[in-house]
Image (cartoon, rainbow, N blue to C red; front, side):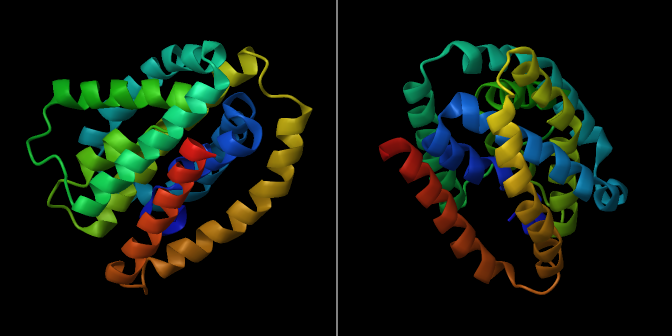
Length: 222
């Protein structure tokens, strides 16, 4: 999903990893994977991204992320896991209905959406839902949408891993899980990127939405 569409890492992995290991153990693994995958995709997206929109979004998100991380460090783990699952379910339903924001993109709104995304990133590992609904509303083609999303996620990937390190959440178990899972992710991203050029969106979307709904349901009800 990440290689194909430019998003999907956090909204799938955050609820699943939170169910398996709890948010304080699962979110740091996902954030480190997100960082390394973002660096893998960013060079090919720079030339196609709309920096006028993406940089304010990313800057505001980067400032707000540490404040969201305070929630990750202090909230009840089971409650936070269920919130992550419910949030992903709502996001998946909104995507399935086709709803998008269809207004203009002035700077204050860019900053507001970025701030919301940063708070979510720090607390749940997921910055994507508000930004995806916001950016996919435009008239740009799929190539521009994908590049915008890749650039946004890359701008906040580094700052998002700092609070878990400072909070002592990145321990030996996190590094072991990362060592096992990251090679699978790294090998899958180029496959998804290649599929972007050959697989019609009408075949991709039902599969992607099904995965989102399943991941959210597991975390909410598991």
